[in-house]
Length: 319
Image (cartoon, rainbow, N blue to C red; front, side, top):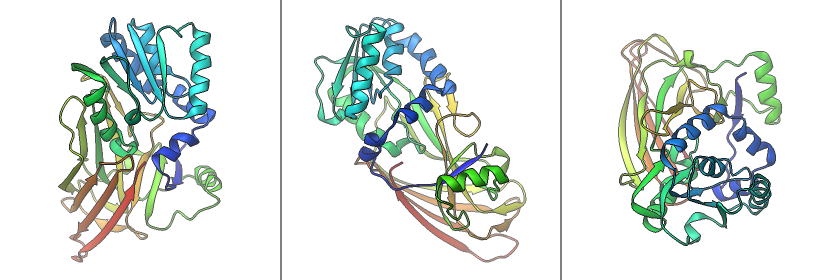
């Protein structure tokens, strides 16, 4: 099923407080995510002190670390209700002496000792969109030993040109009911689950890459060229993730079924004809110095078939 939802503007801290049991169940049911994380956790955490940022109601990553032999896990969670649920779960699992829950936003709390491993899954549908760059930079300064390891190791967000998203009748009905029958015709930013890879019109370009053990700038600007590799109708751009949990273990949100949506920037209400060799020029600006990152896209294309240059500007904040 392809599910398309209009994105709702919400502050990331508000989003943290809005998480429900159903939302956490989606994460628990994401076998692609969980198998990848557990594979890497088993390799890296034995005998080490771990900090888990954003542990959630299930504390699933913290529990994975304990089962893998971690010496101690500090599990940080801002959502007070989620923290209570996590506490009950940890007590039932017999891990209360191994996992210390820490209440608050990670940039506002202190830990009793430096940790050897940082584990987190504060990865947005655009990798940096949940504020992970700011949060991990802070953790590196205050929580971690100098040679600490990071799970995940890196995260890349890719962007590529795509044909119109045509929802099957049932999928369109479910998507529409979920958003009070919104119109999918207008240019906007949408959250799409199970975006069809067959709609891609050309190779993806690197929107952003974060390697957590390296310096992570909070502002940047880059120029991208998206080359059309086959004739079709261009309607917009889709973004997707590659999360390198370690250098061998990779999660891809376009080609695997995961809990991450693929943000879909619908640029044109009426698609434009493109042919092989056409180039979509995209200027990307990112501002990541807060927990509500800002993104701006300036798009320019002059299709060979029309010879008319078209431009679009699009901006958004957060996840």
